[in-house]
Length: 420
Image 1 (cartoon, helix red, strand yellow):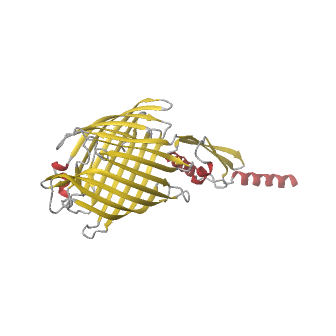
Image 2 (cartoon, one colour; image 1 turned 120 degrees about the vertical axis):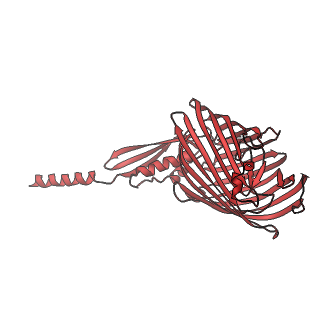
Image 3 (cartoon, helix red, strand yellow; image 1 turned 45 degrees about the vertical axis):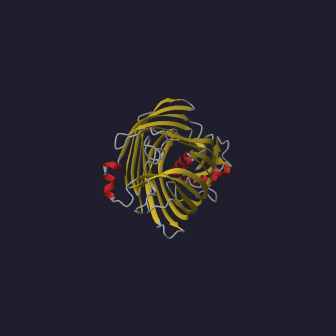
């Protein structure tokens, strides 16, 4: 009788143990050099004492891979017995003190560059601290700090200051004028991560715009000197479902940027501007990557020579030139195929072929402007990439674009990082 009861007890005990919910009893993190262990634990969804959840583990790994300081991350789950598990994250860190450069020329002998230095892992907590100097006929500079996890693993702040001076073309019906343009301002943004794939940024800026006529056509309706204080409210919504494997990317990303701009000068109308970037990446075989970006943008359709959307070498169409047109609406499409020719432990040589195209709505115009041949630009081209796999964003790119539509130009665009 005693033996029977003991057998039944052991059976029920065995069933209870085998039915016990698996629990994480330890989270081990290895491979860190500059990243703080406390920060990685703060960022992680997987915590000691929680039920073992493979989805949370995979989300953690993908989140780590998105950090500028992480080149690669992997995991291992170890069964310790009796429903107890250890989760181990192994992290390969990037070098994160990175120089920044963009240089571009065109067949119209334009030359401009922007250089800077950024630390993407300041204090070991995924804080980006940086500054830049720009030469585009005139001198400009800016500084910024971005701390996405300043207050928690989902809430942070960004602060930016800039003093930008450029020579900007202004387009009239009877010709083109050139103005010296200065924009000086301070921006503050709050950042909140809703979940792994969705985050928002909300904030505003105070800035001053200063236009000074240099040469070219004039209009009695357009002042030759204008200095005005402005304010801006900005909302950014970002959806990110990109999978990362070193230089290869796959998945979809969408970024919506919506702004309201007001002015201290009642003679200047307030206006709204919004644009959305849709980006899609697809792996092609072992060494290929197809990348595409579609930008759709609209602004208040004010008939002004200072329209907000610009057609520019370094922003949307490679080879077209430096701010050659403006509009109150934009449709831009970039697509390219990237192929890796050399892939070593730290070095990658990659080439690309691309087509950049777009069209603009004229200030005060209508949606028919998008189909007007005078507003359409198409620029195919080729490029090359030199990539360091252990340094964040260490992608030196050279692209050459050649126009095949109205007023064709050609040009070389140098830069750090992929074009998109």
